[in-house]
Length: 230
Image (cartoon, rainbow, N blue to C red):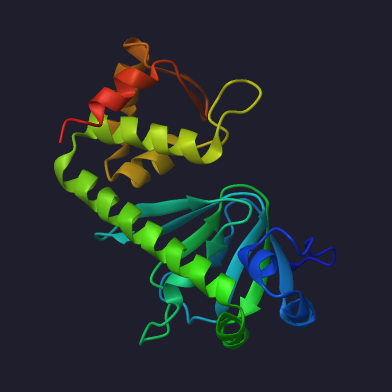
């Protein structure tokens, strides 16, 4: 991770958008900007919590150990999203997840003490963060329910629909995130082999099309039907 001399625009992240104008100079003085290469870790599960990160450019995966050698992707994050927030308020002051760049990424870093001071001063920021935590809790609960009760085919369909909703489509008509089959498997809590087989079934049934790491949805209604099997 390297320092980014260019910095951010002061408008993209949650902290900049929802802080009082009078608080902007303080944010400017305390923020630090960094760049990461594809595959580089921002922080790892078990690292000491140092602060909060806001993504200014690029996309990341947030993941944790699942079993002895497996990983479970908890969520994907992109420009404007916050990462590192799962370490806020913890008694052990350790990050319970890891964050890894899926492509070149720029982040804005805020130390924990200043971030907590910002929450006390900026009520709109505090309220928005509360809503964000509530939404993420609901999403995590649904994710765990799906892992326990939904078929692998349903989980693949659900994952693709969620990725479409978050990232949209690019100019070529693919979901606007290049995702390896291993990352897709880690996101749905299945083995690579099973995910590969199920994805091929969806291709044969003309529900999706795949080109390398790019996936597009051909029949959204049929995919949605697969997610309703619980």
